[in-house]
Length: 213
Image (cartoon, rainbow, N blue to C red; front, top):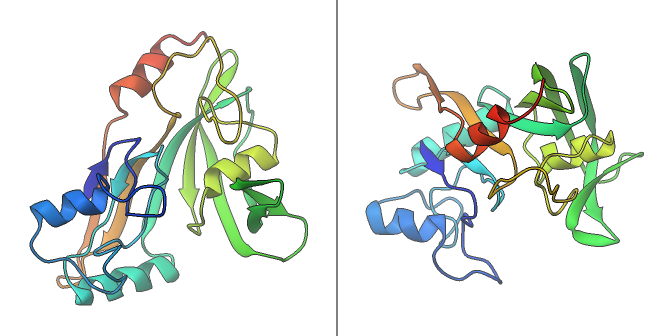
């Protein structure tokens, strides 16, 4: 389990050939699972470039296969913290089918119909500020940009998200305020439940400490 820094691309792609998380993993670890091919060795699930936090990496094909099965049957849990605009009064869920936005290929959008990939996120309130809400976001599925697209679909834009919102002048942070802070899974060989969590990074805490109640 690793803590990915925001701004780091997970694996090589058309726009980024080197200096990715996979390049770093291959430098430090001799063996990684081969299930996802040479470009994505060991990668069980990914995080967006601008999202930091916990990721699970498989060293063997055996572990990768079991962890992928846990992702599919929803026994591998992932939770995020997100700061959004607006004051919320109750917990909520968002579900529906996600597709590429035809007007902006860098975005995913929630469809009214059943085209695309099914997605669901459970949102619960962590703390309410004068003009913002800190949310706990639990993934039921893990689609590209899922949390960001779900929040945009209900007009609650995430703070410091240049792709799905706007950069507010009053909020000073290097990265979008979304962090994968907790993960839970069953260890493939011992069958023991493992839980990992991290504290919010300094850039996130600095913003929260300066918000009005």
